[in-house]
Image (cartoon, rainbow, N blue to C red):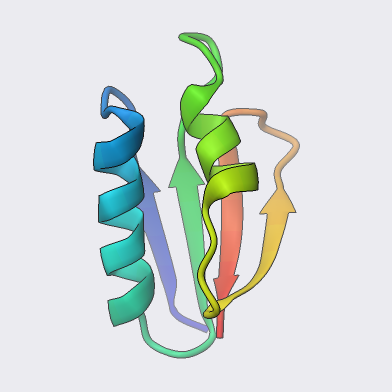
Length: 75
């Protein structure tokens, strides 16, 4: 299973969403994408990744023990 790690620290919500959408579309099938969004500087990026980010290729969202990252399983 291919793995991708994406760090969106310091981006605006719209910048991060655009970047993630482009990566999801271009990702190989069955990719595990770990998104590092942080949590200490606010939760806008985490909320976007965990709740607002929608794409038909996102098979599952896995919340990590680390509150600063979320894993997306891409079909």
